[in-house]
Length: 386
Image 1 (cartoon, rainbow, N blue to C red):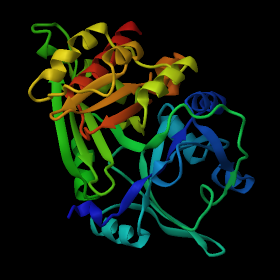
Image 2 (cartoon, helix red, strand yellow; image 1 turned 180 degrees about the vertical axis):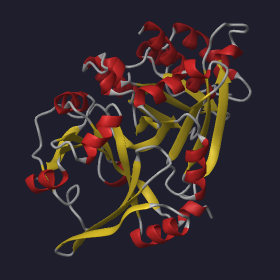
Image 3 (cartoon, rainbow, N blue to C red; image 1 turned 45 degrees about the vertical axis):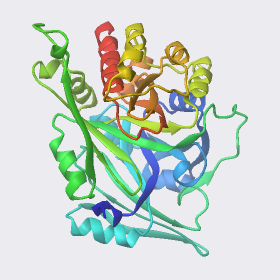
């Protein structure tokens, strides 16, 4: 049995995003298919010093994808302190757990550092309980939540009436993975392993020197993927790879973010082709992929270590929409696409280097080397154009 089984993560409850421009965030999330479902009540806004809105995509429980967007109202609040040190970005991630007391005992016995002990709010027979801990990922905290009959988002939040926004262009199946960048991956990797009980399931390293021998400059990365076998959540961690360590996009992220942080969150969807087609009509910006990637795709998918011959999707549709594909033997594959990071999208460094990914898994539960390289190269092209 995996060590993390005792921690009992069910899935991602929500993640907390700190911004200075809430109107821009609302516009983005509504175009992206999220809808506002709750906001901090007056008492909570006064107590915390920040105004918060919850945006949701998908259904309920582990299928819901919920982001809390908070804007400082006082210079001493958590959002303001975060934004003094970083551009807009994720400051905490909340996980639903099956048994909060068991999770507390598990984590404190493994030297987790609590920010506060278990807090409980009752509403009749319903209970909302939670606690938070620090992490090895800079200013990002982890929160653990247990609901017993609790309706609505969380204590202190008021539900919002449904808007007339168009229906979401995709069915969200939940968070697939959360990717972080750091100047060195070891602290986060070891923390996930020894404190949270996660296991390593994949790794890769490559450099542009692999394909541009003798170049005077280049960029590369090293990555490991930790995962929680119980929930299936995955946690990729990237670090820069020498030579040309300082020139690499991972180091650039760390510098732009003023430290380690969450690079992107991947949302699993049921039909990525229709989702991307609809999102493009809404003006959502995606990373571009070179035509050479699709020219080489049939040969790459036919390789012995991939061996994907029967696709449910047509390559010409993937090429048209810029969707990436990779796979494993026995016709298991995944398709995915990455949105532009906020700083590039808005031509504003303070918007932050975070971005989203959409992914559809067709029997492949891993991470394809081909798509990993394609993402890397797409970001490279954007940085060269800036």
